[in-house]
Length: 467
Ligand SMILES: [Zn+2]
Image 1 (cartoon, helix red, strand yellow):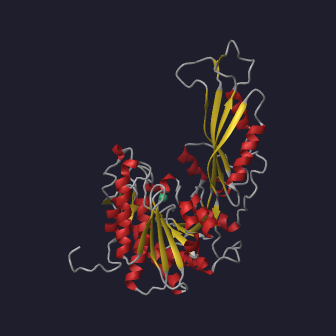
Image 2 (cartoon, protein in one colour):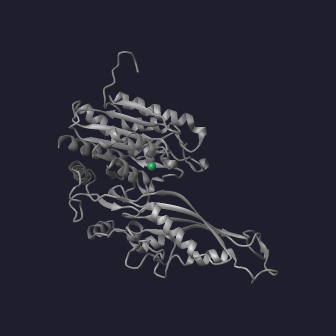
Image 3 (cartoon, protein in one colour):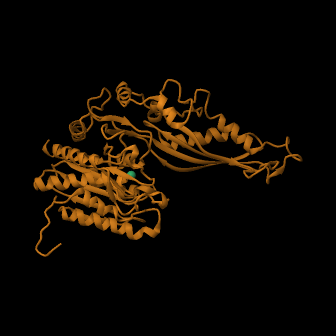
C-alpha cells in the first residue's frame, strides 16, 4: 500500500481476496504446513483489521483461532459467523490439473484446495460484512467472526475454547455459516439437522495363537465365526438395529420434512444406478433418502482376522476385529447409544471367546426447526426466526427458487457443541455443490454461487440489523 493511500472498508474484490487466501497452504494435519497455517491466519487478521474489526489470535494447544469482532450497542443483534481456515491435504498432487495452492479461474469456477471447503463460502460472509459496513458504517449489528484452524482434524480445540469464552459468546443471537452442501447451483439447501456419531473398535480373542485347523479345527470357537455371528445379529431382516433401546430419542419425521425432501426430486432408480446397485436396503417404511437423514445407523466400517494373503492357510485364527460407527439423530445421546451397542455385543459373545469393545470419538446430533412449521418451537428466539425468514427470502430472490430446509446425513459435531455450550442455533446456508470435489483433487467453487452467496449473506445481516 502506497503512503497516504487509505483503505476504505469494503473496498475489495472478493475473488481477488479469495485467491490471496487460497495461496496459503493451510493444511492442519501436517506439521510441514505450519507456514501456510500462519500465512492464512495473518491474511485473515489483516483483512479483518482493514474492515475495521478488532482481531484476536487465540492460542490453542495446536492451531490458533482467529476471532474478529465488530462490537457495538448491546441492544444490537449479534451474529457469530463460523468458518475454518484449514484445508485437507492436496494429495495426490499428480491428479490436479493446476497446482492446488495456485488458484486459477476457468469456466466460471475457481480451482484450488480449500476453494469450496471452506475459504470460498467463508469469503461470501466476509465480503458481505465488508460491503455492508462500507455502505453503512453505523450499521446496528454486532458481528463476531470465529475462524478455526482445526476443522479438518476434528476441531479438538474448539470445545475448550467455547467453554472458556462462554460468557462473551453466549450472549450472541445465532451462528451463521456456510460449510454444508446444496444439490445444485439453482437449488440451495439450508441444513436444519445433522447426524451425530459414535465409533468403536471390537476385538474378539480365541486361542492364544493361530492354530492348525487339522489338529484343532472343530474343537474351539473360531473368533472370526463368533465375530461374524455377533455382527450379523445386530440387524434384523428389515435392517432394524436389534440393540435394545437403540432407537430411543429418535424424533418423528414431520410431514413438512417429507414434502421438502420430495421437492428435492431425488429418484431411487438413478441413485441405485449411481451406486452400481440393483437393490437398496433401508429400514421398512422409509425411502433411502429418508433413511439417510432421519434414522440412526449401525455400520461395519471394517472387519478382519486370520490369513488375508494369497493362496490358502489352514488355520483357526487367534483373533478377529471389527470397526463400527453409529450415526445418530434427534435427541440420541452418543454416550448412551455407544454404551448400549457395547453391552449388546458383550452379552452376545459366546463362551470360549474374550471380547473387548473400545469407544472412539463421539458427537451429538443437531436439529433446529425453522419458523412457520407445525413443530416449530414456540420459544424460539425472535432473532433466530428473523434470520431464517430473511435467509428464505434472500435465497428465493437471488437464486430464483426457495431453499429447501433439510436435515443431512453427515455430522458436524461442533454445531451441537455450540448449541450445548452457548445455547445458540445455527443457520447453515449450503454454498458448495456435489461437483466441487471437496477433499479431492481439482477442488473448485462456482463463482456465480459465490457472488449470489455474498448477496444472500448481505440481505440476511442487513435484515437482522433493521429488525
Ligand atoms: Zn469444511
